[in-house]
Length: 532
Image (tube, helix red, strand yellow):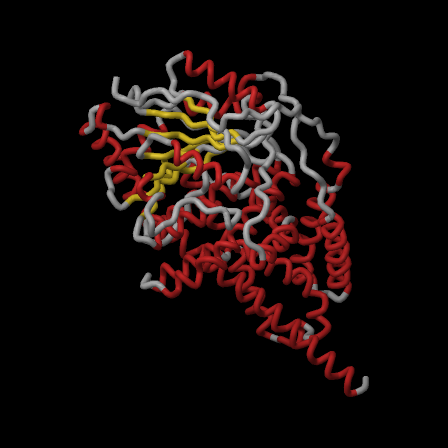
């Protein structure tokens, strides 16, 4: 090897070692951080739940119905023919003092959803409900634009938001409003997402475990320990005054996660966000891998956009160091996918530039730390399930979640990189089936109106599966099976996700009929909100 080749090889070796070390260090740090959040959640959970229950009871006892604030429940929709009827009826069925609940359907749809919305809204108005259908001249700003437009027409001092795939329980407002209004500094109260279709498949079981981990350990650990948390875009209540606070700036559409963005700007302005784990709202989990990838792509890209937009402001503030650190881990959390992908792709070249056996005893330390770090999220998820369901039911789903997380990390990594360099973007909604109630009623499934376009990323995922599979075979042949364990998980994850994302797996797409545009942006008269 000549001198030039040696220089190139040395530079390559250093780059591989540094990248691998950085990825391993971040994953270890993130895993240890999840242990801390689990401990913080466990310490505060019982007393906080008791305190919130007593506050709800006190407010209900002290406030006659006429003294409860006017609430506007916003339901943003865009081509949701499968679930529009369900969510509107559920929101209208919530118990609240007569004349003090306005339902605002923010309908940006261009298909048959418009007809469904108009029919249900008229039926509910005939029964005495205050249902207003709001249609904008265009879809500027996507969901954030719809929420801002609706807010300008809303009559409530409290704003609740429910996405199309949610089915709020009848007591949601009676329990959520007291938690928001009895603390003047509260800008928002976030409820927990529960699941309509958890048992549909292995995919929904894995997702439900991850969602439970977020809505117990993460949200509880942050909110109840004076750390920044986020409104999750739905199943929550906002104080209108906080959204319109000039120091906050209202809804903006320069990121794909308008909820996360508003949450952090609100807390930087001095407001607080409260989390109530007992305020559960059922929702529908994505039932296909392409749908899940679409959802995760939007969340990952938007999170990194918020990190780029807000982290410097956070670190320049006078917030405690613990709050700054947790905000950083939170806003950059999706970058875990980037570092996971880095580990999977660099195992093979790392072995050749710095053979693992040359590390001696340090190899055991590195592997031990990585396993400890990688076990952090599963421990948090399992404990969350223990608290929510009263049993350790997440053990069997943890391997499925790990395989799924690894499998979609390539798509999510692309989203993270895009979020670091691009503002805004198209808000691609996650398709909903609306079939969750079928499990309870035994009725036939609804027709599949919406299907996603195939992305060429599936070919990269299958190529990554082949690469990781070859690397796994190689490590087994050289008796380095301890490293091969990681690569076996990568191979299986990429293979499943890539195969399930190929065009043939999406099937045919039934196009929903278009509906003629209305000329008026507000298509239903607002009923009076005066006390009856």
